[in-house]
Length: 372
Image (cartoon, rainbow, N blue to C red):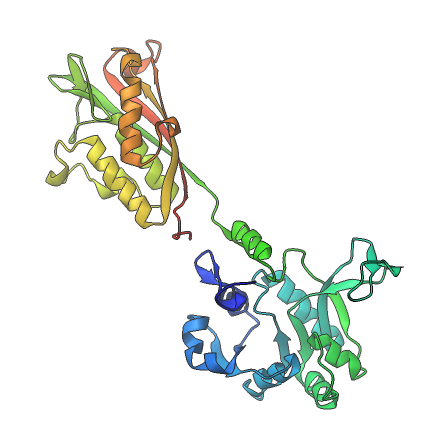
């Protein structure tokens, strides 16, 4: 990997690869105990490296070879554990369905290895060379994965018989060499092993939370003597929104869209209209507070689209300034904010000029370093 730490401890959107791998087993109803085999110098920090688990979880020191580490892990299991699953910490995408299939394979055959069929043509090239020596038939070739599952007594007996000079590349190989049949079960193409920087980059993309979209709506009656304010821009008119705050429908609708996308409630929860603190509060100030709320939840605003429905006055002369003020408050470039003015064609209270309404859509993306 060329990384400053072992790959199992590299970050995968907020958790280490190891923690993601452990979590799949910790959440499975058939798993009773977890043992994590670590380098000897890391055992003292095992709890911190593994993180919190709901199952009993121990950490032990590994050995020189894979089978030595597996043996150390099995020694840490209670005596009544009769089925053992062995999983590579660098495979963070094992899911419950795969674990179920492995357990079913163990119940049927005593030993089961998940795998996927080889799809590409396979060429044999001598080590150190660059000439193809042969094309290998692929019809009977599988790529082995983990977790690999075994009846405990089968695996222990196989390991006792293993030649000291043999370094098995997986646990199924140890059982195969002991002469016990191993069942192949269908693996999962997504259950990749993180081996290269490219693998890690792809894994981060795969596990990164996608964008979230929220919608918002606000409506206020228009009353004489009130200022008509949209995103802090005062628009000359003889009436304005009647409300506890300044009645800025653009900001209020956008706040609800943002909070909704972040799963953080709505404007009434954070800025209730019966709280004196928000009496005559400026819409842009409330919007800035909403930005801080969604940021604390791990999100940033990507773009916003707002439609204002108002019979008169015309908003076109003010749209550019409204967009600039919104963009500055959201912390985005002006081209990521769109504001449109529409009439209601004389229909209902808005169409009669008695009210103003606004619809908003906001897209949030995971904030850098805060993805959830």
